[in-house]
Amino acid sequence: MKRAAKRPDLTEPKNRKGALAAHLTEPEKTVASGTATFVVGPYPARKVRVREEGGTNLRDPQARLDEAAGLARAIDLDVVEAFIVTLDDVRPSTYLGKGKVEELAGAIKASDIGLVVMDCALSPVQQRNLERAWGCKVIDRTGLILEIFGRRARTREGALQVELAHLAYQKSRLVRSWTHLERQRGGFGFLGGPGETQIEADRRIIQERMTRIERDLEQVKRTRSLHRASRRRVPYPVIALVGYTNAGKSTLFNRLTTASVMAEDMLFATLDPTARAITLPHGEKAILSDTVGFISDLPTMLVAAFRATLEDVVEADVLLHVRDVSHEDTEAQAADVETILRELGIDEARQRSLIEVWNKADLLDDAGRERLATLAVRKGDGPQPVLVSAQTGYGIEALLAEVEARIAAGRPVYRVELAPTEGATLNWLYEEAEILKREESEDGHIALTVRLSPDKEARLTRRCPGARRVAA
Image 1 (tube, one colour):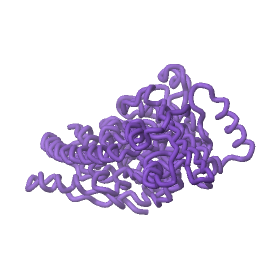
Image 2 (cartoon, helix red, strand yellow):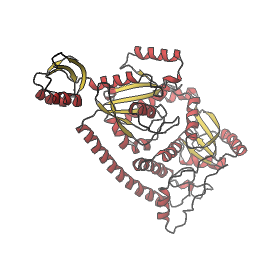
Image 3 (cartoon, one colour):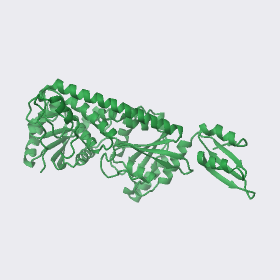
Image 4 (tube, helix red, strand yellow):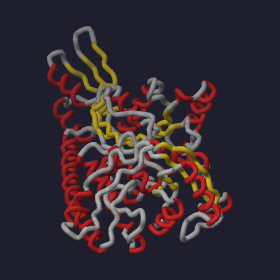
């Protein structure tokens, strides 16, 4: 059984700042691999959840626990067992009640557990007390998600965003109560830490590093703004994929673009954004952008850190909200995504450009697919969802047609007649407009019905004075 690798002791005053700063920039790559782990879901009793959530109970406790165990497995933890612990009240000192803490302590010792994942947000004091009681490392949901993000980021931008979120979390862990603990924490990761006593010095070192990263991310933000400005000059409409983690966004991205972005049945397989050009049914080019998946209780520091990446979502012409309709908790997942979109400033008016993509139809039986297809047609509170399978290609043509219709809404349509000698104008129309209909007469004259963006309307009328606008 693998245990957390021993960390260098940074409590020596000699060159402390340099040592700690170096450690803060070192991601933990394999420290958790194979560690025997318990996953604990401390969820309020149903009556408490209803009271706390304003009369709604969106999430099933077992689905929540399964998701937490999936998060733990995403960084190769050996999940020995997962427990649901029903709470009537949250204890300020240990989160769980005394009896449950003692009961779990016995199970942890018997199974030789090295790590306990608590699927909740623990205060530093609660985390310390549980570690003392159980004699093993304890991390909460936020720490686990940050650890996953630290493993998944591949680009420099992604690494900077993750490190910024890590440091913001670590800064909140610096409390005087954990000085000289048997198992001390600190540094960049969460599954093994060096410990520290000079809290103010640590806080200053972390803040200095955060300031430098924020400066670097500002440069990233400016670069992305320049890229968006250049795309607007082309201009190509932007389509952004959003959705719950593991809903199939990257598989759909690969299906639409014939790219080979990493797409696995794993939580947070994609962190670094990717953009590719696609061609819509009538020939218009568009930019498709894949983004990081969302999750319930996403740490606020991660939303803030990834804001530069998610600006593509905010400015997109069309949003594709990809949902895994085969998942038992699909409605709750959709609600979580909508909440995060609102946090990003995408209000109800902007959500009119959103298309719900009901993905993973291949995992449903024939009756399930038929039921959802009927439900999509009958949905009356907005645009119809599109049922697809990114894995098999089912429904992709209908999805592209819906995307094109959404982009084309309000665009002018013209009837253009060209002589056989106007080959340059014909070529321009094929390059700059969507050809909806083409008719050729025996004498070589061509009649076209075209649709184009409003900014190209003046150029069309200059090139083709006889063009006339028609109903779409």
